[in-house]
Amino acid sequence: MLSVERPYNLLLVDDDEHIINFLEEIIKVRYGGIFNLMTTKNSADVPRILNQVDFHLAIVDLHMPSMGGDELLEIIKEEKPNLFVIMLTGDNTYSALMRSYAGGAYDYILKPLTPQSIYLVLDRLLSVLDNWKDFFHNYKR
Image (cartoon, rainbow, N blue to C red; front, side):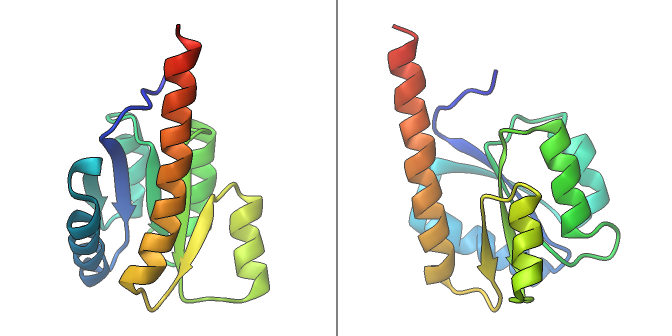
């Protein structure tokens, strides 16, 4: 069973190194040691990585060359159904967003990314994770 204790394990998946670096920096600045970050630019590596670490959440780009975010979301949800997945996309069409939600995404962040857009989603998700932590802590008593 996945431990619901801080620090939370966060996987960043984007083929753009600038996006990865930006996300790492703003997450470290705001959240300090709340997240253990792991990154990959190659979406094809994600199934292997998922078997090595129990992640609490993943931030995944929708459009990547080796494996698209929709396909990757499906794999993640098959392997780790309780993993929270946040999709990154520059495609703000209704159909793209609904596909992500239908595939099991927790939320999405539109590009171009801003610190505020990332903080809004991560703050909300942290509240959920912390509530789970409290629930499991009280349930074990």
